[in-house]
Every structure is written in C-alpha cells, then in structure tokens.
Image (tube, one colour):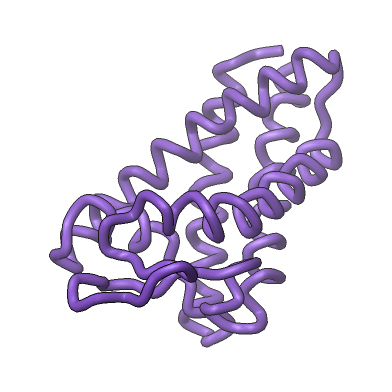
Length: 160
C-alpha cells in the first residue's frame, strides 16, 4: 500500500470534510467550527484563530491519513467502505473523547463542564457529541468523517 496515496487522500478528504462542515454551518445545521476551536487555543484574535486553525486542521487531516494507511497496511486490505467505517469510529472518538474531554481540559480559552467560563473564555465547550453546538451537530460531524474515511480508503485501495 502506498503512503503517498494516503497523503493525497488525506488532502482531498480534508478539503471535503472542511467543505461539508462549513456548508452545514452556513445552512444552520450546526454551529461547530473545528478550525476556529483549534485556532483559539493559540490566539484570542478571532481572524488569526480562524486562519491558524485551518492550517492546524489541514495538517492534522493529512497526518491522520497516515494512521489510516498504517491500519490498512496492518489489515492487508483497504477499501472505501472500510475507510468509511474507520471514519465513523474516528468521528465517534472525536465527538465523545477529544471534543468533550481532551480539548476543554487543555484549551486555554474554553470553559469546561467542571468550571465556569471566566472573562477570558472565547468559546463554549462542545459537550458530549458536540451537542452544545446544536442537535444536528453529531450527525453532520459523523457524516463528514465517514466521507473523509471513505475518500482516504478509496485513494489507498486504488493505488494498491
């Protein structure tokens, strides 16, 4: 299996997931903005946070495709549907652990469920399944992650 195919798939998948999440935000299906959440961990300037967050998000999406490649390589099999399944698991982990527990614990400008947000907080914590950003957020997020995984899996499978 080809790691360059995984990197290409990670790039395309990140463009697609970013686009899907932004469209969902514009259609008012969710208020989640993962790049903004990431960027505000580094700066309180909202415009800088958005730009920096997209850079971190893009790098993470491409880097994560290498993890997918490693798992596919270990299994000796890659396909779009297996990638979609990994994307679903990836999205569930993001919604239940990363955004609910880990990010609020380390984010310097985010309130958490165990403390009140003080005057320094810029963003509210996402909460379990990121429900603080709207009732449709879990579905939107999981669909976008399934698409990412399917794309990465397809790129790896096609490259053999």
